[in-house]
Image (cartoon, rainbow, N blue to C red):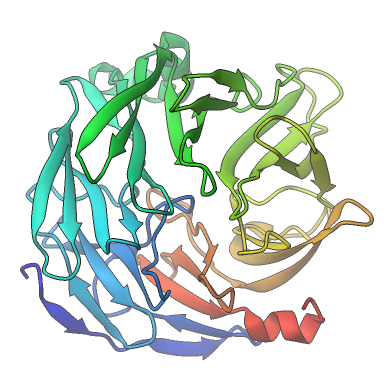
Length: 390
């Protein structure tokens, strides 16, 4: 297949066996498919379509999935395939930014499928997830020194911590998309990942130091216009963990948080953290048991969705469910219920990473249940109405 190919899909609709909510397998006959990382801009301006990655002849390529029209349009045909977790969609200008092999950053125009190279990173560095500003005028990303390709088979087993302690050189770039002008915003000998632009102020950039959450000072802020820098929340090493941070629509930061009484103990207590970019108004909402693997808030940040649902500390099989979460402002806890089963294996790219559609009426997630990756759409508006969470 070539770019521009329109594929008519045959969605598979069913009622979840436990909650009875409507779930639709959108990509069952497209081939192995998944949506990109949950912190990225994925939806077109009206929310009627989103960018996904699908396997075409053994390579990942980008598609525009029309959520309610049962069709997908192939957008790319780049050799080497498109990494499935890294593109972002600028809904203002209707373009998608993505990496191709060799550290090349490209931009494709959805309307006419024309594309162009706009940046290239140095050799022996790896480009990160991309973040688009809400006005479409900037994208931000980092690139980090690559060690993993040089690891032995023994080192690969411990590569996550090893890469952290090796402290690869990392650079954060903000690129003006109209002028194709880039600026180096920050750099250090730390493993930097997950760069995100604040939706209210594109000068404010959130990033993290990668590694086991209890071993790193995770969240950091840098300002592109002044180069000011500060750690967003100062952790107590070995006692606290913070991770999977993202911006709310009104510019606050949400992150998953845990704390324990002493190093080495397994008595973690889990929360979702809300914090302003200056470190003020810190609030923690407590979980009844283990936390989800990833959470993503809706448009108002009054609710969230998670890829694990442990309703109590001894709840079984919580990792098989999509959880619906409401932030209880009075008791500072999460009210949690099950939305549907995802039954994903959690292997390789099979992480559910659930996200709300822009109108908050549906949740999108990825699962490989049945043996193949597919993108699913779950009706959340009826579940919210049933629960009285309006």
